[in-house]
Every structure is written in structure tokens, then in C-alpha cells.
Length: 189
Image (cartoon, rainbow, N blue to C red; front, side, top):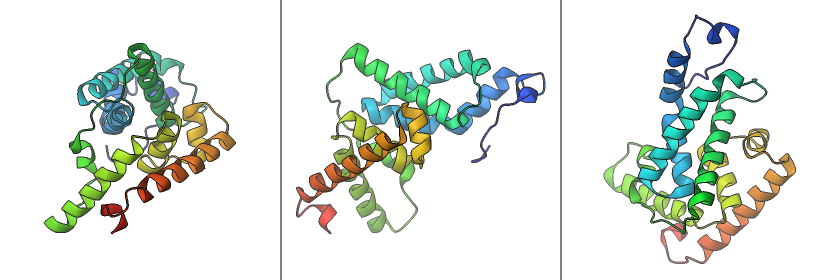
């Protein structure tokens, strides 16, 4: 499938590509990102997998009502954010343990030493990101890990663009302060 964006139109909804085939294509394209996004909220592999499954059940159930006012990926990410937030509200979870394998998909092929240092730095950075308050963490993760632009973030989070910009700015500032507080750590090197 690659990185091609799947678009829904009348032909897609009709017999040209069945609903099941469309969902399979969407899952193939977005399952990893949906899982990682859910994980960034709940910090638990099993729960993130459950949320991912629930997201695609919702996509299947509501795909016929998708109006195309936003990009399909934004719609799927919004369902993921809402489903993750609903889970956190229902269960009123406290911080869950961070698992070191979260960034496995982000590692590049390099020398073992360089790869280890970079993965260690990424894991430490992610640990700091996951300590941010939810509204800042969400914006940081979606912007930097998912490459969503301000207008896409506004759509996914259902807030104004200026709110996104403010949260992004404050989130970066909080991150900077937290990283500076870890002087002597791998971040300073």
C-alpha cells in the first residue's frame, strides 16, 4: 500500500471497492500509527492494541458517514484521540509504566553504537514527552511523530488553530525546561 493516502469517493463506496476491502486498506496503512498514537496516551501495549481494534471497528461502522470535510487520516487520528481519551476517562488511569520498545519502529539502520545512542536518546526524550500534561503531549506527539500541520491538528483535536499553536509553544517550552533539568544526561551530549 505504501504511503499513498486512500481517498473515499462514490466509486470507492460502491461496488468498485467493497467496504471490507477499504477497511483492510485503511488498517494496512494506519494500524501502526493508530497503535503508537493510542500508546502515547495509555502507555500500555495491550490497552493500545485494544484501542486500535476499537478505532477500526468505529471506522468500519462510521465510514459511510465520513463526509470528506477533513483528510481521512485526520478523521482516523481524531477517532483514535477520542477513543484513547474516553478510555482514560472511563478507567481514570494513573501513569502506566513506559516500555522501552515503543520506539522500535523509529530506529534507523546505522552502526550498533550510533543506533544505541540514538535509540537511548529517543527513549529518554519520549519518556520526558510522556510526562507532559495530556493536552501538550497530544499536540507534540501528533505534530512531531505524525507530521500533522497546525490545521490538521486543529481538526483532529477539535480546537482552534491558535489554541494548537499555543499548546505547541507551551509544550515545547515545558519540554525544554524538563530536558535542561536533566543536565549531565544524554540530552546534554
